[in-house]
Length: 62
Image 1: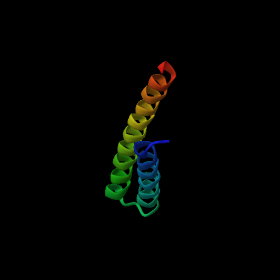
Image 2 (image 1 turned 135 degrees about the vertical axis):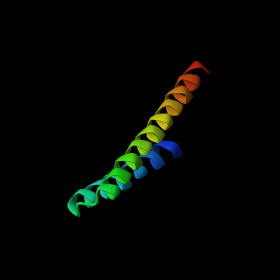
Image 3 (image 1 turned 45 degrees about the vertical axis):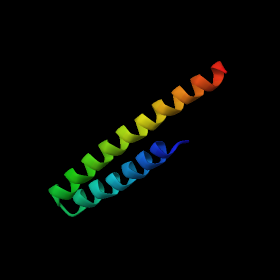
Image 4 (image 1 turned 90 degrees about the vertical axis):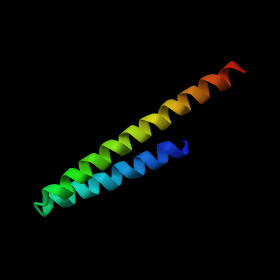
């Protein structure tokens, strides 16, 4: 697991917490911020996954 995968998963979790807190307190701004943060974390995690797949493919070639 690389740094981007870990950071992405952490951002997803933080975003989910904000989203739930925003919905619980009827704070639409906080809920929206959480959704955005969760999405950004997913993108970073996916980027890390892609990097890992490329690294694994290159390792198998050598």
